[in-house]
Length: 437
Image (cartoon, rainbow, N blue to C red):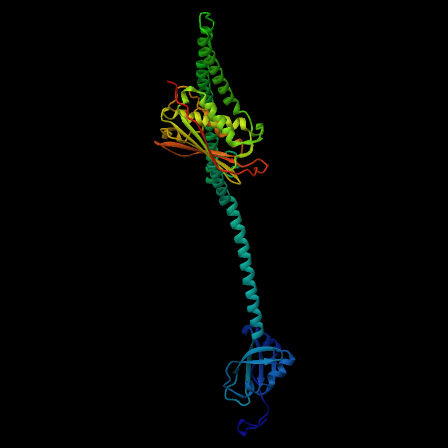
């Protein structure tokens, strides 16, 4: 052995830690990266694959430069961000620890993270849509149904389907609206019933008054006829008055029956519209009261076509009687203009009367609307409108003022048959018959 002073080397004692695979794996888990221990250019231990270990040894950047900073290297098919630490500074060769962070794994992680975020976004959108649907079903939809019900009620539809669901505020409002709608419907039904009864009463009052007036004339004149002391001219006059009263009752009954007839009751025949108007004029002129009125017919173009001439005569007769009653017979003038084209006839009946009062202008064609007439039933213009509309036409007041009124009647030019090719313009004047002195 010898003394210490002799300086003889008997052996070596090595102190430290053994670097094996277990140490390398533990350090790799702590660093969350791949690690490698090198002694100079010799690879001692690592967590890399054999191919990557070979590539790592060949990298001069990692084995020669002691001041090497982190840089990107390619080991096999994988990219790493690599750096190293000298475990024994100042020794040559020294022990180095290489730390390699896989960029491919980081990229893959970011890709998975992005996919996860996208998936979470889609799930959030789907869940949001479901929540919106639930919210719409429980709140927005009932509100929309309530709004539609209000709009339907505004249009007069009391049967729009609505249901009360749930017990929230919207359900309470819907239930209150349904109660209000039922109340309005009941009120409307009662109002219509009251108006119907009032109309029936008005109709009964008007008809009974006119029938009673005509029957009284018939009864009185019949009593006078029973007197044998009457002369023949007196008997003839009484007989004419009885016929006139009967004709008035017949006209009243015909006016009432006209409302129960449908458009299919028309019996159109091929005829001349001018002839029908002329017969109406002659019928009105037969009334002594209207004989002083000057009435003229003017036409522009052909006036033949398919009409129910009997009903049109009645319609124009009602218009002419109304016009005669609205003006002074001594200064009264009625002008009837007929204009025809390929599609329709336009007939204008103009008078120089006092015009239509503002009070009845908006209800002129309603039944039993009359103004300023002692014996009027208020059915004349209503019958005119129905007859014209049954022919597929229309009637309206074109203008009215204190200087007179113009009624416009529009009728189809034909009913399935072309208008005859007759031509020629003309003016036909019905001679005014002066009142007997």
